[in-house]
Amino acid sequence: MSSGSEENNFQGRDDRVQSLRQLAKWRATARVLTEALPYILRYDQKTVVVKYGGNAMGEEGVAEHFAQDVVLMRQTGIEPIVVHGGGPQIGAMLKRLEIKSSFIDGLRVTDHAAIEVVEMVLTGTINKQIVSAINNAGGRAVGVSGKDGQLIVAKKLLRSKKDPATGLMQNIDLGYVGEPEKINTEVLQTIVRADMIAVIAPVGVGRDGETYNINADTVAGAVAGALNADRLLLLTDVPGVMDRNGNLIARLTTTEARALIADGTISGGMIPKVETCIDAIERGVTAAVILDGRIQHVLLIELFTEHGAGTMIVRS
Image (cartoon, rainbow, N blue to C red):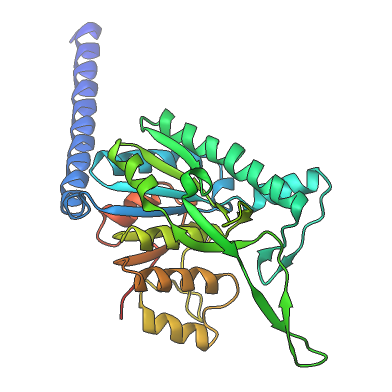
């Protein structure tokens, strides 16, 4: 056999191997789509509120994958609403501007100087970055804050704490820190009807025009409840709710979640997240999920696969 014939045989064999590999890849893609189809149909025309945490944003490549997930959700018939945080980014800017900042029970004390920075970072830098990422991924996103169209009417958040010396309860002044009093859903419904994706910065407006910094989890829960969303998804930088042995708890009822808070299994910063989920469910949300936003395409894994991701909390 001539060397030319041998080369042709080798080339033909390589071409067949390449074709078989490509066919296997196409079959794998088809299998994934077939498995996802029931879930795509299940969420068709359903509202899903996604809280995109400031901590989750810090991972390289996360913003791009997050944007792709949100666009695909919209293209499959889901109506996604995004609420974003920005705690680390706010902290970095306050430090750069040499504005002192402190926390009480996990909430940033926000004075007049700090609230200007909070609004600048949340409604300017972060909000527009997320909007741009979604638009670059093929979506149509519009950024709003709670002040736009009075989307989030807020009131001052009141907190009290026991004085260890006297045993008496003391009022704590957190400054311009608020909580949602009313969500004007008409603003969001107008955006959805225009086939666009709302990206919300968690800044609210008081009855007298004051600007309030609001916890993004709290805003996401309030928006989900006001819209009777099918899902509330809280993206953070941990896998979900863990048991005492450090294992992920895949599913909890609201009663079970309260019991785990009471016995100390759920502690620290996970408590307000779980309480937000419970409150949203009591307002009519079908289920809430706490999941790790650093995982590539975690939204698609949660919504379109049988095993999902993170911890799902449902009504008891």
